[in-house]
Length: 248
Image (cartoon, rainbow, N blue to C red; front, top):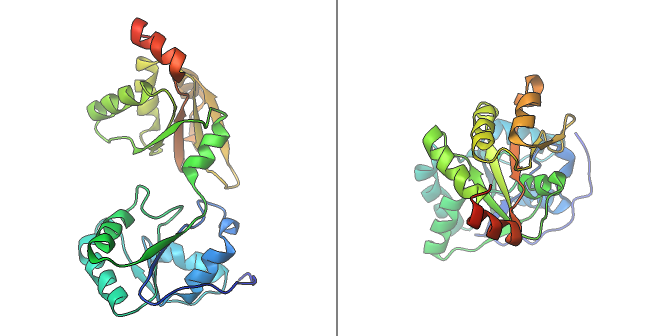
């Protein structure tokens, strides 16, 4: 357990706090996030066992409840009810910002409908971190979430991504990364991309090159962990040329 100075925090009764948590290194949690979690009456988490390890590391004892994609229809009304009763509710995902590729957005819509207050405690973001690690332009970028599971839908998804003028960020499973790279190699064999893996962890690594080059080195341990693909954007000039010549 690590003892850290936790600042005072304004946590009004009946307000929901969406709290960003570390994406790998538990030391990346902010002091404000720790203060909010400690002050909450209950913390709703995707995986309570995962969140309990974070709380135990900082000596925070607070009730945990489960909230994930498979139970959100039942749990959202419970959260709304507890907020109406004046409880202080915090919501976290397993890593990063709740609501981003996460069931938290279902709760946000209900809070809007019920005119209930919420706020965000910012923190680690795998997408922005991967963008900086990629070395590609951050001036204009698009986050597309997870690529579809079905290969045909994934191909269409990637075709659209490759047409973007700015950098594009895509989450991909380690089980499908090679299949996705194979599609990218077919669609855009010369496009440079990056794959960021194990971000903020001991084996953090950013691989850069064409899809074909990455396929040659994405083996063994490099096929494990959380992966973010970053496609270098076409840019306005290259986009105009691509529209004329069909280049990708």
